[in-house]
Length: 217
Image 1 (cartoon, rainbow, N blue to C red):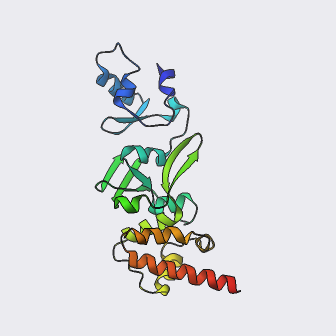
Image 2: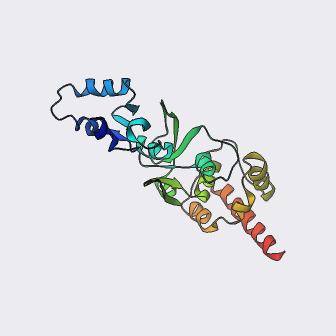
Image 3: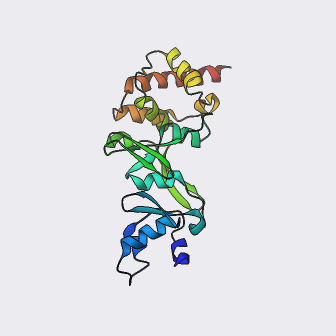
């Protein structure tokens, strides 16, 4: 049966799916507890598991797991910016946005934090990322930056100098990469009245100004 478990790879599966491997077994909940105790599966939340990498044969992906723990959701904010290599700090909490209520899940694989976002803003700048034969949903760099600004308590970008200080000093964003970002995604975020649209508008002005200054050199 261990070979059967490996068929799931690193994709999170429900208790019922694992139980289907043992159709003749009556005490399936007891079997799940045994598999978890033996380190063959890892419990993510009630009714949701992932096969351990030793049994699944693939390294686990916190991004893929985050998509499954609480859906619909996308990897965003500092987690996405770090994944893209746009900020230097390593992020130890997997941060996501969701149209559902905000939630936090503490698992053996780490903490998964979900922040609420409107359905209209949620769909702006989403992308599917392929990695080692599987895909997960992640915010584009532009959306991740918008979500981070929107979620930062007490942050208001009123002037372009505020934007520069925030990007260069507070989050230490790769400014060369910022110059290449798609302003259309920022504008879409504002159009759907995402949180802190005024701050995002100031960010847009700053980006346009920097791009024009760069083109003039």
